[in-house]
Image (cartoon, rainbow, N blue to C red; front, side, top):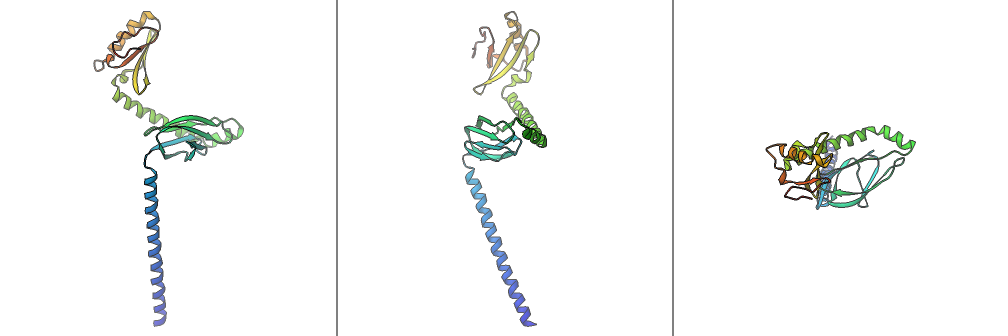
Length: 217
C-alpha cells in the first residue's frame, strides 16, 4: 500500500510540474502576442473596413485586410481593390485617416452574385446603418465647428442656401434662381440667426460676383 501511494504521489507531482510548465509557456506566448500586436500598431490608426458582402476580399495598399472588422492601417491615400465572384470588382483610391471608416457595397453582375447578395443581405444592412450613424456623428461635429450649419440648408422657389467642404473649410453656397433674387438670398442669409455672422465664412454666390468682403470667390 505504501509503495502504491508513493507512486501515485510521484505521478501527481509530475502532472503538477507539467501543468506549471504549460501555464508558464502559455503566459509567455500570450505576452509575446500582446507585445507584437502593440508594436505592429505603431504609426497606424484604427479603421473600420466594411464592404458588403463581408466575404469579399478587400486589399488596401497591396495588403489584404479583414473585411467587416476594425483594422490598423497607415494613414494616407492608397489603392483599394475589392473582389468577389459574381460581383463587379471595385478599384478606387481611399484616404485612410483616424475616425473615418471605409464603407461600401458591391454590385451583383450575375446570378451567383445576386443569390449571394440575398443570402448576405444583413451585411448590406449593417453597412447602411453604420454609414447613417457615421453621417449623424460627423454632422454633429461639423455643427459644433461651424454653428451656421444648424440653420442650413434653406430652400424655396426663389433661392437655396447650402454648404460644401473645401480643403477642410466650410463654404456657404447661395444659389438664386435668377439674379433678381440674389439680394433676397443674401438678406435671408443674414437673418438665419443672431448667433452666426455669415461674413466669418467663405461665401460663394453662384452666377454672380460675390459681395462679401471675406474669402469671396
